[in-house]
Amino acid sequence: MLSLPFDSHELLSRVRSQLRNKSIADEFRDRLRLAEENRNATQQIVTAVNEERRALRIGGLATVAVLIVASLVFFLLPIVAARNRIPGLCRNNSTPDGRADRTTVDGTFASGPGRP
Image: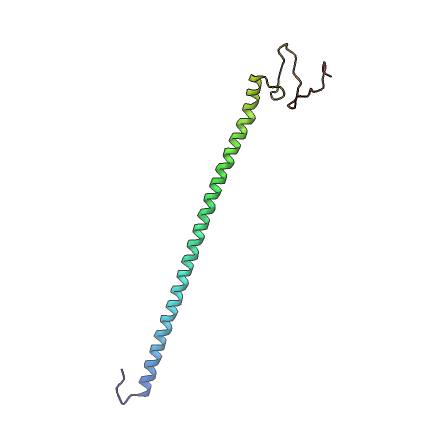
């Protein structure tokens, strides 16, 4: 508040002071807005990274499960085939008369002694 008559130097210094205060307040608001934007962007990045980690974890578990099943099939199939005498699936098949069975998986005979 200025009283009449007013001094022009006093008015000018008050205006400059108010402009300086406004400039500082505007800069503070801009920095606050920028900090909020950065915080939101950071939160989005953290969320995306967590989702990717979850997807990788699930993919890794699925890969391990597939490898376990494949290894079980690889190791157990010849054992089951030998027990059930499935031709062509077991490594050392023999027929009931003691001769080696040389049939393949598709049922054809492999060439060898005593076979056409």
